[in-house]
Image (cartoon, rainbow, N blue to C red; front, side, top):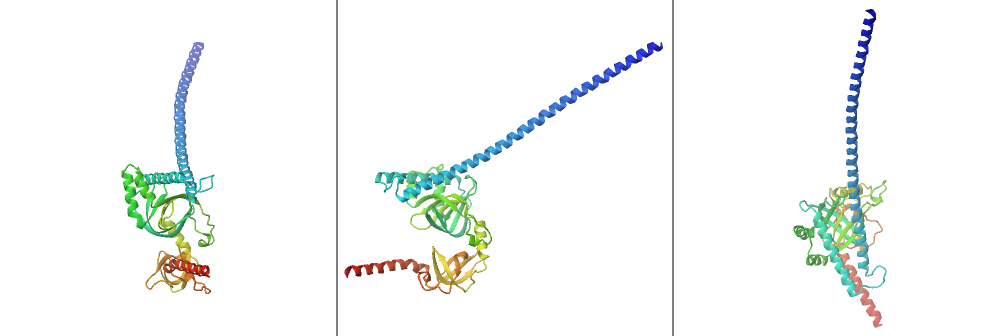
Length: 353
């Protein structure tokens, strides 16, 4: 009996151990399966996240390529416009023959039509911002004066930062034209493009908007050229600008930097005012909160004042002598004609002698 009992007990122990091993093995297998499933889910999640990141990177690269393509088109058009204005065919000196000139004019009208269609597609006419600029804008050899402008955003254009700045005198006509083009499916009729081209010249190029170093003491002002499009008025110095500048914030910062200079003139001081590239003598009458100065130029009629941003005004030097700079803006425009007439009379007298 003792031997049989021990045998049965041993047999039961072995059976119990086997059952425990089988249960442990089954549990391990189940845990391994769950772990494998978890591992597969995590791996799929990682792959999905990688794919989402890759799509975002590709979209960013696509936008960058679109913007670069637009910039290259603007530069190419700028080069072609300079060639047409100079009257030369690239690689062949001499004036354009009539047939080539007609073809060039046709291309100019077509480029203006394309620009109008593109602007009409992206411009937002629902919100207008009007403010004073007071800058000369040089692009591709053409200079226009931006004074008071009406501005519309072009957020859907590449980059999302472009703005269209239009002289307030032309705000209504340009808004009506763009609204008409929008309503026409962003298509410009040939006759409409020709009438527009008779008044405006397309001048694509680059615009550097950083202020000069003298306006920001202690800071390194490095101009950053950006592709821009200028529509220069053929009968005046006005222009329409499509660019990321001007903005109210940029102008405010610039005027604040200019107003922080220590040698600024005070109300009542003798000053020199820069107007369309020429300096005129006068008296500083007032300066408003936005840094805009009112100057009574010496030779202007009584009651006539010239408005300009303060950085266009400087203290008059003691050595300033009466000259063309001492004339008012109105008389300065008449003086060159009078001098030319005097020179013609002198030449006629010399010829008679």
